[in-house]
Length: 466
Image (cartoon, rainbow, N blue to C red; front, side):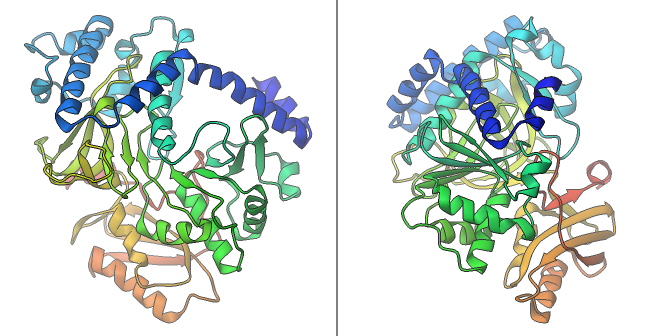
């Protein structure tokens, strides 16, 4: 692998594209084998199932999945030993909750795959802590991609459509940067991968102009990157060709209304959100009406309060049916969601339960001793009624102090916006907390390529004491 990386760095740009294409051909053989097409047809046929049919299917899959884990996982065999009828979905509250640290510490006992060479490794980005490696089966990978592609297929997407992709792939060389070339292309499947590590004012011109020339039908990836490109395009009067882009599928980060307000007008198309995780969490999909739906055939979603009791808004605990390699059963994934009333339905035809809001990571909060936790949504809303703020990041290293790094557009940002931004923060954290507002030229992304609005470096102290 080290030799291939060395060879890649020495190669010219056109060979890089061939490398990327070849890598994807090999990867797609695992994702799009015969079982993938079986699953894809299955999910298409299930799109109009009633709520009762979906709940019955969920209960059946839950029983099958837990019995599998009991037979093949040493860890779960011990966990379930003294729980009668542990496999019944109505008894799920009797099962222990699995934390990330417990998963990391017991990964070999939880894993059901004896020979790890037969597994597909999946790693979390580690942006909020240590990275985590889990093992998935080839069958589960095909099922997950079939479920995801079925969702994207609602909007016309399929593999081979011209797609701009923004993710944590670090494919550039120093020569690329010198030439202001921030992308590599899969020539066979028409996917252009844009770097998320070089999103700064000096380079955005090249991103915008290349995307306009490339004219993707679909865009996939980090919304925090896509918004910077759209914002630059709007600011400098670029016009993305109307009617070209059919849909944008954001990944890995929470989507805010501000993102939609900037991204959708510039690219002249809608964003359709989806929720999952690198570990293999069950899916949440956004329908054509803009409503989020739990996908019951992918797993069980529990929303719990601080006392582990069912709630309509709280932390998300998941049981994921497509994780047979490393079974995730009542896994505390570290995110918060808010559910809609169970009686509410959607006219799109999807009868899965509705989600009011994906609130983002529990780690993504600011803590005020005066007002308590301020979640990611409320942090994002500090931009309300301001202009000229390009990007900001809130960093908490002390209980009573907060550092706000802010990148501004000096032509648009004014004293009124500054005062409003400060007041918006005071409205959330109170007047006692010290806030250090610092204006900077750039805020770097994480090693994964993601941008974090909040970096809370004392969350363990807060969780254990407040």
